[in-house]
Image (tube, rainbow over all chains, first blue to last red; front, side, top):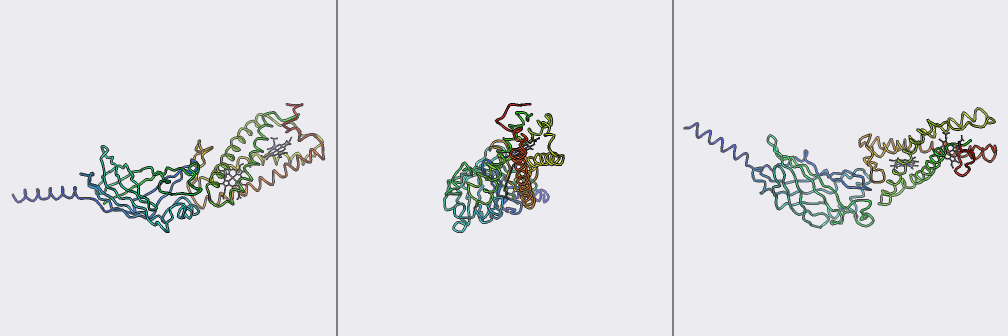
Length: 182
Length: 179
Ligand code: HEM
Ligand code: HEM
């Protein structure tokens, strides 16, 4: 009898553990990167510093929620000259707007491992809705989220003035994210 | 005797493109970062890659078509110098664009010919290598400039001093003795 209770208790505990939200984002293993097109040449970049609070339960992904804050001054746009330029007024204007944020409000299943997070993205004081499809993979004790979505830079005023010429720098920028949760 | 029509067309087409790519390279290099600069860099790279492809065609054509013999009156050393300079010019019409292409890859900015055809990146992104290749590209360009100056000076000497008709062998207009 005692053994039965014990094993039932263990089972319950492991069930609870499995259902528990994984929310500790491994920042050193996660990344936020982007690909812009300059004269139709894909150019890769990334944000080296960000914070992320992600709560997602693989058993009930629909209840997932997330808040990502990106330190815009940590941008790597490919080379030093570009890094200086994109921190300036025409681009991210990091002095006035040091951070960009994404706050998700809903996660909807797309079938299998695929999901879509919807939420509000704020950059340079402008808040717009974005939909970011991603895959969710569970591997021995960790969760891996991988996704990407196109972002229209001009809608946020990123690259204004002469830089708004989309025949040089395309309006659409592909944002890629990779989060590892423990 | 003249060069073949194909050899003449390729000579002048390549010369024209180099006369465009060279000053463009010098000009764009000093511009502050702007959309105009990104545009000019791309145009420069497209021009340069075109030079490279035409130079390959030209060398293949040259391998199958010996140039007409130089005038007998020309001293041996001048004939040898002429051959040496021509060979070096062929080498540089390949090496200059090749160094530019490798430099672009090392700087993490791929070359997409006319914005349509992506060339493979033969080297990965590497800042130090990119800076080294920029110096290689620049040095090869100065060598090219010096050799072309010598080449043009020699052509003008043949025409106006020796009056031996060597310049006309490469003339687009005079087609009396096409070989
Ligand atoms: C025959 C063809 C070419 C010629 C005559 C040429 C000539 C030049 C010259 C004169 C410069 C300026 C160097 C300086 O001021 O330091 C330059 C710079 C440059 N060239 Fe070329 N080039 C050719 C082909 C190419 C190709 C094929 C590429 C790339 C695919 C290329 C990429 C560049 C780049 C990126 C620079 C700027 C270097 C920097 O910013 O430091 N070039 N070129
Ligand atoms: C105004 C500029 C130029 C003039 C007047 C000129 C003139 C000539 C002439 C007259 C020849 C024939 C030489 C002969 O009969 O043996 C020749 C050959 C040649 N030129 Fe030029 N040239 C010019 C620019 C260039 C440039 C920019 C290049 C750079 C690649 C070049 C590369 C060559 C080469 C490689 C040959 C040798 C062809 C062969 O025998 O295989 N030339 N040029």
